[in-house]
Amino acid sequence: MAEARTGRGGRRRSPLWARLMVWVGVVLVVLSAGTMAAGAVLEHRYDSSVHRADLIDGSAGHEVIDGAFDYLLLGSDKRPADSTGDPGRSDTIMIAHVTADHRHAYLISIPRDLWVPIDDCGQGTGCEAKINAAYDFGGPKLTARTVEQLTGVGLDGMVIVSFRGFDKVVDALGGIRLCVDERTRSIHTGRLFTVGCHHFTGAEALDYVRQREDLPDGDYGRQRHQQQLIKAAAAQAEHEGLLSNPAKLDRVVRAIGDDLTVDTNGVALPDLVFSLRRVSGSDITMLRLPEIDGYSSDGQAIQQLDDTGRSLFTAIREDDLDTWAAAHPTLVNKNAT
Image 1 (tube, rainbow, N blue to C red):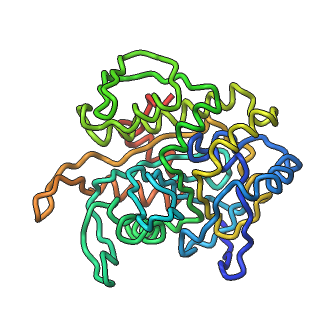
Image 2 (tube, rainbow, N blue to C red):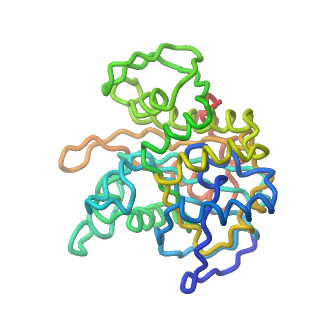
């Protein structure tokens, strides 16, 4: 694939408008079929609504209009700019890969308990730990660097949304229809989610996708439910005609803006919007790593990477996830609808 270098010094701080905002709660949904004129208007209008920050080191440097690209998507319980100084936790970690022809996107969930090398666990000393510890040790930049070192995938940008942002997006969309695939009891609210398709409010959806203790497959079940939320939100955004309804788009943008932080790696907004015009919710495939249980040397229950997981990272780098998905059908989340 063609690659072009994009330097980060002198970067242009173009804000992401609703398309990329909804990319976190609605990931890649509204990234299709918008007009350049609407993009320009919303770029100016919501300049103050979206938090921008240097979240990655910018080692990838691809121009998104020239090939495949990869964004890191993080769900955190705090924004990076939280005044307490506590970076919080990031229990939702996904790579969004857009193919070179910009017609398909893949979401790859990375287990929060995956045991990985982290190069700075305090005072410049490296260690091995669960991957979500990287956010606690060093925030978004260390998390991005850890994911790049693990996967060999150069990241082109990052989107971080606080957990409260998810329920705001769902409510702004008027709720979503989610199909519960297994009986789930919330340890946070006591709410029981029964098997079948139901209408969810934002609070209900967030409660549902945060559960793992009551699921037979634990965090892998939670990953699946998070992916289902994204697909459901995508379907609802398309059903609502978000792109052609400025009032609805405005409502979603205002709902999520304060809970979103983005880094586009200096890519100009019109280029990003235009390159994603052909990706819709039905063009998103959800993938996961194999579930390989293990224990760390200090007795922690962890997930481990195997050769199949490594081959997934190779497929991302080679932009050949379609072949990988066909060869590993059990690792494709077919229930994410």
